[in-house]
Length: 251
Image (cartoon, rainbow, N blue to C red; front, top):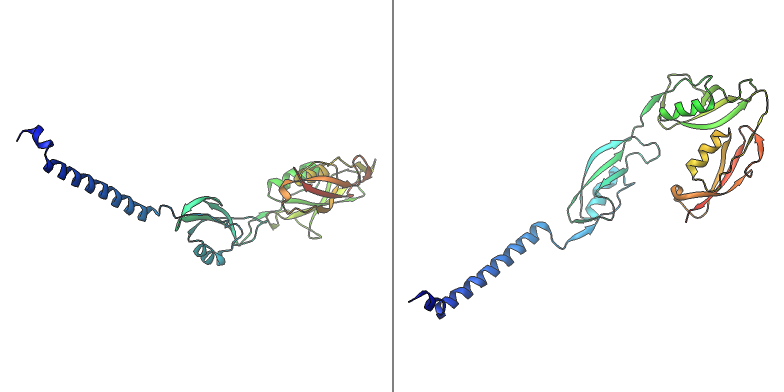
């Protein structure tokens, strides 16, 4: 039988059909097996692990069909000790069931630093030095002294704190400052439209303290702006006076 005659025969078409069916079946079977191993179509949304404590992680991850590994820890004085601070993949990401989530937690111990020497520094110098040590400025208290805005002594929780004392990072240090020999007054800056952090800086630069703060129906303190203050901008007040601030969420 010639080649042309062979490819026109029923025998050829029969085996061609069988080959096509087998090829389709093998491809279908391979895709099914691949689906099983890759969990195709079984993706889930990654929940927000932030704030979940180490003790709660096993149940939390199991409830969401996920695994987790703690890869690092950090010191963060503002967060809850022993809780999740960062995660990878991020919340709301789509992943397969059983995916491993990599977590960074907040250490149960707070890093400590040595108290720097602030005596005789200017207010601006003291603020800069405290920030470089990971410390914060607390209240500004003024007493009679010829050197205006010079640090007489620092205090922590109402008591003097000697240079070199170990203290938790992020602690607030109150500053006892000289009131000067000329004017005991300062001008209140205009804080309208400022963020919480910006308002704090402006007040310290003006030798003033931040008083009570009010937030209008918002727990998101990062995206709020000052819309009311008391005393009003450009008022003349004594050094160390308190300024009350009201915030609302920016549009």
